[in-house]
Amino acid sequence: MRIGHGYDVHKLVEGRKLILGGVEIPFEKGLLGHSDADVLLHAVSDALLGAAALGDIGVLFPDNDDRFLGADSLLLLKTVVKTLHEHGYTVGNIDATILCQRPKLRTYIDDMRKNIAEACGIDIGAVSVKATTEEGLGFTGSGEGIAAHAVCLLEA
Image 1 (cartoon, helix red, strand yellow):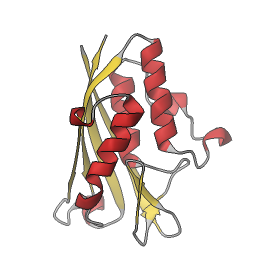
Image 2 (image 1 turned 90 degrees about the horizontal axis):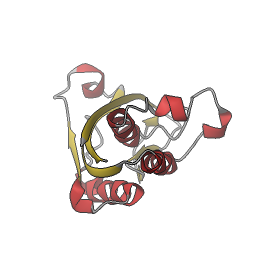
Image 3 (image 1 turned 45 degrees about the horizontal axis):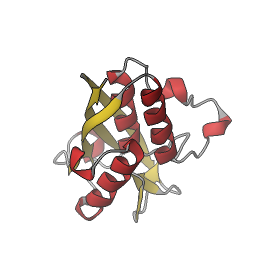
């Protein structure tokens, strides 16, 4: 067994869709990034790659490569899982936390869990997604951006 931790952050800006866990969430701002900037899926991908000592998503999907401009992060996560399988690993479980003052995410969490589970080829019961505010503190608390942490267990 191997464990991994992932972290990602993106700035909130006007004129972009807000996509978290592969779910489009109605909001006046979205996350800025080369791909769809899905901070949750990026943290999950980094946790998985880190557990296998395969680097991070910037290694597989560099932000200076136009092939990944506007990329769907669910497809990127599926590629990460395929890479893990090629190295003899399967995903055991994932636990993730989104740090976000607004919008409230509770009604979208189960769809995020479902998307992650399907992309990783695991049961939804092996995927936990939580959301928390930071009580108005820091860049997430002030609404400047959204961050996510993820941990995972890989099995060889």
